[in-house]
Image (cartoon, rainbow, N blue to C red; front, top):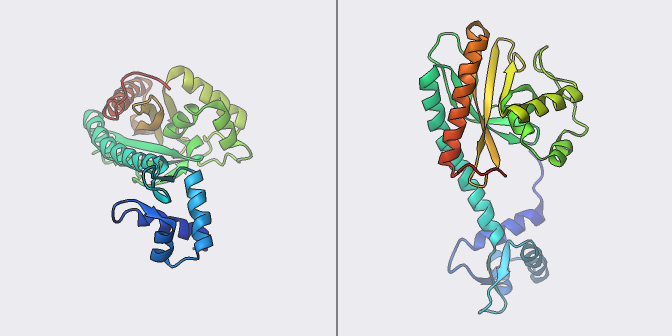
Length: 257
């Protein structure tokens, strides 16, 4: 386990004080409650205020309350909770329609994390689990999410990264990945054939929030023994409908960021 950084710990201790009482504290209050040196408290409070984690109370000079940045973090946390819960519900509905494995995933740097999953009832099905992390470039959900990033952000995330394959069919060439992502942007759908699992194909569609931003992707996975071009087209339509339904539940109304 990594070493705790004392300055960060103290800053978090200060923020957590505001969970108590009337929500307004002065630097002397913080000094007394935490037993920290006055100079340290002054520096930490000044830094937190500069980053909008704390703001001064206009009618109470020298006192602080939580700033808008803490609200934004809390709102994002709530959005993630809603996304996981609603994603599980929609994944279940899609799985009941096609009887294949359905995932909802989000992007973390250059990996995807599965936040919802519903299994197929078939004896032969994809083995996976919610919470699993995989390289984004090897999965349909990951390629969908990478393709949705602004170009500068995509370059920054991929710069200097080795594209390690999971199977012989994984994309490991940067130029091939860029072309694949361009095709995904044009289609609005992503596919994966045996790239993360040699026995599975997947198709994924983007999930958008109320501002039109792509925040997740929904995929349908099917073993190769049940995959045909016709079946793939059916599953692509179901994935797109499921992603649209989940987007609607997150407040999306057709606007694109």
